[in-house]
Length: 145
Image (tube, rainbow, N blue to C red; front, side, top):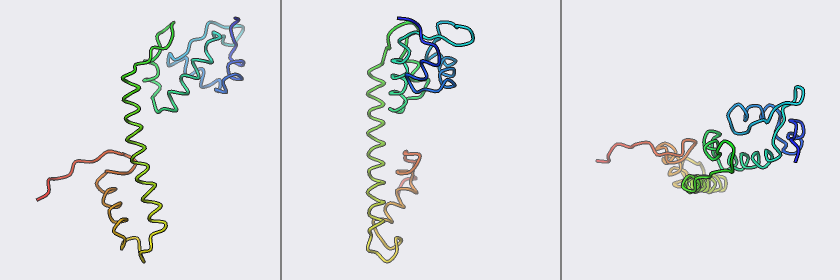
């Protein structure tokens, strides 16, 4: 099969040329040369870009994704790294589900004020302790007396 020029890769993959150049700079893909001023890529690069997109969708960083590729070979995906990411996603899903349920409760709560609602107060307490929120990690709490 013939090489693809950068425009063909953009058209087939939907990945902008600037992103392709960045991925090349990061070592995630490699051009095979140039025809005139246009980069040329191996016909397998769209599949590699699909793997990168899948990794990004799963929450892997580009550096983590780079570890999944050997320079001139097939992907080498660490199953332990996949299992760890799945566990991380499970924790995120639990945290977001709890947040969703709390928001639904707060939206329909019959208490005159959210501050009078015991459920809402527990949500506030969890947010203050770091159990929920953007960090998603508990901050150390002093021992209770």
